[in-house]
Image (cartoon, rainbow, N blue to C red; front, top):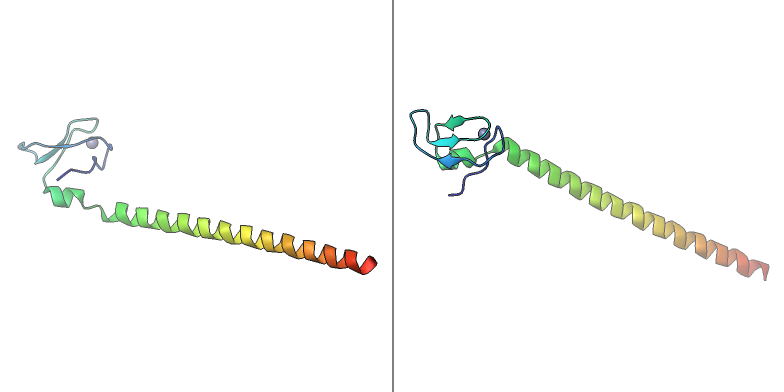
Length: 90
Ligand SMILES: [Zn+2]
């Protein structure tokens, strides 16, 4: 199983059995994690934040789409009104 990056420094970790723990970050933070690969890769808060970010991006994307559609509708209506007014003056 590929391990996720270190939750503290974001660098690559490696499985290495030491007296301090099984998973070892030998980068900036020099931290050992005494846990299994599965538990190390379980990041409920990170997963929830990613889901919230995706939902936020989807909301912005669809909301922007509605603004564009409303703007297009407004332009079409304005154009139709101008044409109708122009045809009344002929
Ligand atoms: Zn680290």
